[in-house]
Image (cartoon, rainbow, N blue to C red):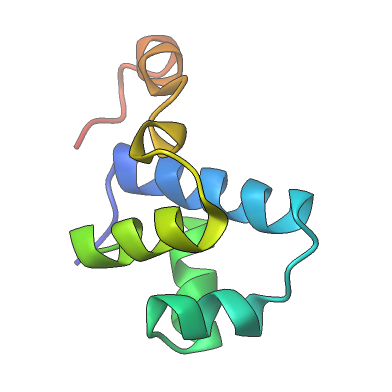
Length: 84
């Protein structure tokens, strides 16, 4: 299933967090129960994460679920042509 605007935004937040924390993709992939290739699909916006994978990411990085949604309203307002 192609990712929508929100899926792409969550993927960008995941990538930013992984880089900020200097964690290798392989470690995050294991935490989410996916391949490294699938993780890169999430991060590039090519695929959306399941609720379980999003929860696992929150637990791994010790962030609130709201971390992945913060600022999305601003992005959506500035790009109304892209919708979910």
